[in-house]
Amino acid sequence: MNSYTLGGTTIDSVDLKCLVVSRGVKVDNAVYKAFEDTTRLSMNPLCCNCMVFSDGTIAQLTDLNFHLRLLSGMLSWDKLKLLKYASDLNTPFTLRLLDGSEVERVGKGARERVSQEVGEGVGEGQNGKAMDGSSAVGLFHEKELLDTVSFSAASGFYRQKTSGGLPFTGNAVIQGTDWVAFQCLWPCEFALAGKPCEYCFSGADFEARARKGKPQPEPVSAADVVEVVAFAVSDPGVRHLQITGGSTFDGVSEFTYVREYLEALAASPEAQLSGEKLLYITPPTELGILDEYLSLGASRIACSLEVWDEQVAHAVTPGKMDFTGREQHLQALEYVAGKYGPARAFSNFIIGIESFETLAEGARYLAERGIMPSASVWMPMGRPVQGSMKPPEVDYYRRMKELFAELYTRYDLEPANSTGLNVCVERDIWNYARG
Image 1: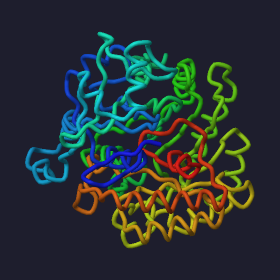
Image 2: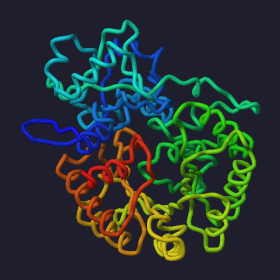
Image 3: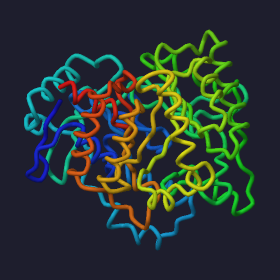
């Protein structure tokens, strides 16, 4: 695992990933010109760009220049609102092309990788070579070169539509090198009732549509899900699936959707995955539903609390607290962990929203019961939370990393075996714990 010196402090790749994800990056246009035709790098923020550090760590690449334009357009943010948060939204990180002398300033391992990419082509699943075969991309903090980065292999994924006319873009993403993920397969009923999670970009869109009386998107059909997954697994390396829908009041409609997705995927020879299927669901009152999901092929089930501090949770996740409640989440999680074993149930935490002390309390509570606390880094550039778009400093992330590494090891809580997700850091922490 790489180490870096940032502002006089030594950090590792997990720390750097957390900082980059939470602060975004400004990407020089020359990087897009050099790589957008040969890698999966796009100016469209909906295409879930990522970058790969020289040790293989994968991190979300949010270009603030383009992301803020999307945010302003979709959520009707005017310039005054953006100006209010301007100081929070500045980032010290930039990406730009390097010249030969700059490549010499990075570590030996990074130099060897750049030499291989420029001189001999690309590695499996990645492409760090510019169109002219002579450029490498550097990640800078202020004016200090930290590392060289590469990008995932080119794919036609985001140019596709299903036979029913559903565009892949905006409905599903390829994360890292080996995940296909659906971010919101049906509208969130909590958001329609005016109580979306405060950090959630999709929830804000559903809420705004409901408030203006605009029609909501139809739930994605099982046939469309199968087509998207089938195309994704035809790309080299994609082997895991994440299914996420909107929260529901009674769980009946959600059960209908998820069961249809799992049955349709199982019946399709073209959509077979060699990895895991993760379900992010609303905790059902009827626990037998969880058994059915697992019997239909789900690998793990998340009923995510997101925030442990109950006072903060009421403000940040009002629908989860008011409509389902903490006890319903814990009941479902403990049922799965108790019946199926460690790490088959997990709960996402949005890392950076609450104090480290309450985050640690929640993570320990779950881990002691065989429930994996997963770690999704808060991306403040999505929406302000409790009036702030300012992420925590590196010490917060370092303490979280050390705690989660200890819990994963002590309670045998291994995350999905992948190259890593763009925003979530649980697999990165597992790798860190293994040294």
